[in-house]
Every structure is written in structure tokens, then in C-alpha cells.
Image (tube, rainbow, N blue to C red; front, top):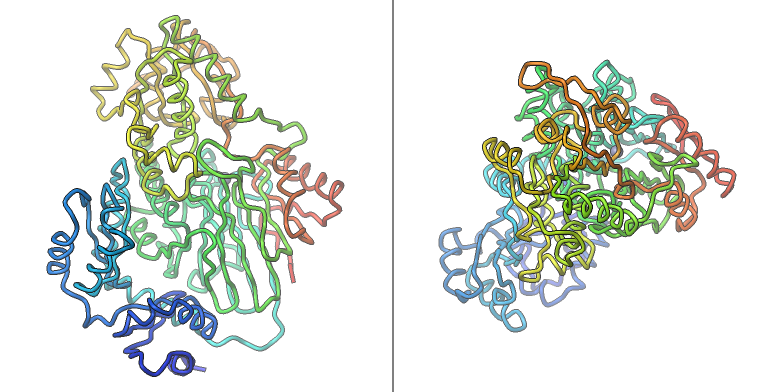
Length: 637
Ligand SMILES: [Zn+2]
């Protein structure tokens, strides 16, 4: 059955469902969505059930859009919007999405844009034809979010063509032969880093994650791209990304360099954070004189090919696979991917990195699914002894150390990853200083922390509800507290380094493998009044690990020359801030899983942790478990 036939069939189904008075002007496939253009948007607005019936009849997601002839030009529409909306609403941005016929109005007081019972919005809609959406202006502007939005507007036509191509590929006819399902481990099994898993069915190939091991330079840093299952690159139907950390997405741009041209599915915040971290990755590689595996053009390719999906939004990603993302609780936008294969044939979920505890930033990971036969689960802290203190205990310990140090006029350095830990630590410090639990002092943020925080405030719906409310209550947004100072130039860093006053510094890199944190450390290490606090995992071989182990004489590169650093500052470690579940939380996640799967595959952990967790799960729950090595294939069905 050719594509024309598929479109014809869709037209036929639409005709059957839509009452005769409604004028349908065109039907198209855009990525996973069937788009229906009409001159009677009002009829659809009046009858919500119509869209549901269409989605059911077409067995796809449906988007109803106004016929382009009904839409006012951008200039005309913008002028009218500004005339209708009262000035007190304080519009900060207006952007049009040509491919959806929607206009987003961003304002400081969104209530005034909506009007009483939507009166203002209704008037706008009547005047300009575009469907108005309202969003609250993010409290901290993000350069990344703005640039990506501008870029997407600029490539509007290319993107439309791309979405049509994906739509056509998705609508290709399915074979009627016996079907099966396999999972191939291409990286991140019995190790942490370079995560990559291939899911293959009779019909399609899905690559989940494509990471890089950043602490590993001698081979072994990329997934097994040359595995025969994966090649050629253009045989892959979809790439799915669980989260923005580089061990999960660091090599996605390289796929485009080597011939992949299909869609990348991830949540909207993952798309933005991933671009930020990938750009930093090539910058850091360049700075270290290493060849980067791709350039910024390939990072743009990823954005162009990205199809963002929110949590709980189910979507076809190949003729026989449907994907749904669920909150994973690890970092902003991190997702558990649930795949429904065939028509009720099989269900498999990949946990990615999960936190099964409510944190200061996010809700606990989801572990309820409509159906589930196999679960793939991480085991970073899956060893028998991998217990971590609770969030509360961690906060208490941070309070003690920071309080002690600031009271004796010392300085505190906290090395952090830009995304995840730094925002948690910021929230804890803000509360401690606001409630006078520790002395008030400036908290300097150096590295990409500010920008990563801005992206967090652009996606409040991904934060836990308590924080979401705080972020939007004027004067209460903890990220905007005046204790936080953004370090935006080398001069400012230099001044802070030599300032005698007590202060705290949150700076990258998290494992002290370079980055601005080193400048503060070199300057302050020899003073016993100061403290260095580790809040994240320090991998073997990193500078952070050496310092944590108590090395007190260190040779370091200082702008080209070797210098000797003697460490007299107090070295502390506060556990409990991790974005990973500890052993107890992993076991709880499985104990309360609904439904119980028939098989559990363990990955993303050092070899003995994978084996330890797999063994314990089998013993405790009687579920078949596997801890495959890289390059193994398991037949699931
Ligand atoms: Zn990871």
C-alpha cells in the first residue's frame, strides 16, 4: 500500500466522522501527527468529542488547524494582539508557529491576557484567525531557549518538509509475517557512560540514547557504532533520548555526521539542556586540544530533527512502536521511556537514570505503567552497601559544614555539575541563609550554572509543585534571591579569588577535571579556614577523586606551567544530593512496580553493581533478571 493510498484512507475515515457542515480543506501527515485543516475551527472548539473520535478512528494523534487563508499576516496579527491586550499584562514576547497556526503570547501577567472566562483570548482569535496560547514569561531569561526558538522559526519550511518525510515513513505498510522483538546493548552495560540500547522488531529499529564516556580517553568512550545490528545509520527509524547528561546524549550529533537523518524524540527541556551541554563538550574538547567528534552544525541538526514530547503523551515512532515518556526524577526533563510494541504484542520500559524519592526539584520517578513485560533499570548505586542519607540529612550536613566555615570567615567551594546538582544545592543554601540557619554571604555561581538554572525556570511544569508555586510567586523565587551572584568575566573571578570576605562558590566542573572551579581551588587550597565540599560522585582517575581521598600535595597545570598545590583546606563530602536512586530506592522502585514485569535487565552500573542488583532482584522478587555485557542481544519476544 503506497502513501497516497494511506492518505486516501485517512480522508475516508475523516469524512465518515465529521458532520457534513464542517469544511475540511486538507489532510497531511506531520511526523506522528495527522493534521486536519479546516475553515470551521469554531465547530471543533464547540465539540471536543470530535477530536477524540478522529484520533480513535485514525488511530493517531490529531491536530486541527485553521486553513492558512484564514490567518492574518504576522505584522497585522501582532498589531491587533497588542491593541486588544491591556498594557498591564506586560507582554514580553509574541511568537507565531506557522506549522500549527498557533501564536504564543508570553506575558508577566498571563491572567490579563486570558481575560474573564477567556474573553480576551476569544476576541483575539476572532480577529486574527490564529489560535492564541498564553504562557508566563520565564523569570530568568535563557539564551539557549531563546536561540533555539529563533532557530526553529528560521528553519520553519525545512522542518515542515522533515516532518512530512517522517509522517510518510511512519505510514509505511506493515508486514503481516510473524513478529519478534530484540534488545541489543551497545554501551553502558556493566559500566557507566556511553549509554546506547538498540530495540529491533520485525518492522523497525529504535536507538535509545547515544552517550559518551567523558572520563575515558583510551578507546571505549563511544558506543559500539560498528555493530552490524545498527548499520546502516539510515535504517534506524528513531533515536530516543532519556536525558541531557552527556553519558546519554553526548554523541547524538555524531549520528547526523555519519548519515542519520531521522527524528530525535525527547522532552522539550532535554532538547534545550542537551544543546547547551553538547556545545560545551565541543568547546572543552577544543580547549584540551582534542578532536571533537562533531561540530556545532551537527548540534543544530539535532535541534532541526527533534520532535519534543511531553510526559504521558503517547506517540507512534515507527509503524509498530509507540513511545510514552514518564518522569524519571533525575534531572530536568529526564524520562523513563515506555515502548508499546505491535498491537498489544509487548511492552518494554527503559528507566534511564532514576531518582525514586521526591527531591527539592522534582517528583519521584514514575513506576506505574498500563502494561509492562520487561524493565531495563540503572544500577549506579545498586551495590548491597550503596545506601545514601536522605535529602533532609544531606541538607543538615551541608548546613553544619557551611555554617562552621562561614562563621570562622572561611570560604566554601562546592564543585558541581551545571545541570541537576547545582540547582538542588542552590535551593538548600537559599533556605539556610533566608532562615538565618547559616551566616548570610554572597554565593557566586560560575560556569554554565546560571544558564542551566534559567532553563529550569523556563519549564516550571517539570518541577515539583511546591517549587513551581514558589518560582512564580513574586519575591519568592529562590533562584532569584540576592545572595546569588553570577560570575560573568575572568576579571570578576580574579576579584573574588582575592576578596578577603567569607563567601561560597558553586562552580563547574563537578569532578574538578578543569573548569572555573580550579581557579578558586588553586587560590584557596592552602588556607585551613576554607572548606571544599563534594556533593556529587567523583569518578576514579579524576582530580576530585584524588583530593577526596586525601592527597595533600598536588601537581597542577596553571596556564601552561606546572605548579605545586598543598591542600590545607578542609575536605568534606556530603552524600545524599545524588540524582540517582540508592540501593534501597532501586529495590523499592521494583517492589512497588505496577504491573510486575516478567523480566528485568540491569545496566548503567559498574560490573559488580549490575550483578549484585540483578542477583538480589531475582532472589527477593523471583523475577527473571539479566545483566548483559555490551554487544549482547536478548530476544524479548
Ligand atoms: Zn547516566
